[in-house]
Image 1 (cartoon, rainbow, N blue to C red):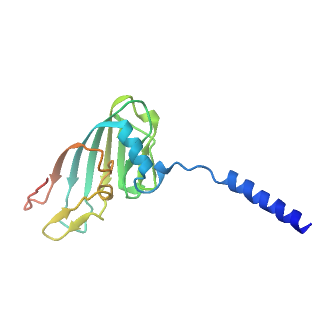
Image 2 (cartoon, helix red, strand yellow; image 1 turned 45 degrees about the horizontal axis):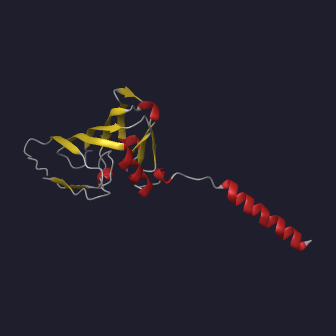
Length: 181
């Protein structure tokens, strides 16, 4: 009877182990998994960013910004944008000129396939910039956006093999000047 009970418990645990754990797509993990990076590299083309930041003189005030992310897709599909800030940091979001039901999960903004189109797509996001990559002082501010850090500042595809053209504009305190590379 003892051995029969152990066999039943072991079988139940084996069955529970096989059925309770559902396969979780690693593209939705925190950070940029290899699966996400590979999938995006295969599906996203002609990437360009139009980025704007409003930088207040008071370093205690939030830096805000907008980004227009333009890219092409071979087919309508879900798009996963990296942003390592809370959902409350997103002030507005449109996909191809229309408001859409996006979701924020595990450092990503997830745009549903219904909001995308085959060919050219434009995602426009107004946001509160993250502070992690901002080095702020009373008289200056600088960023160091090494790989895996751009998403701590603004929504983007934060992987080095997705090269993009970008434009950058800034609203600065009157006495400041700006340099970019």
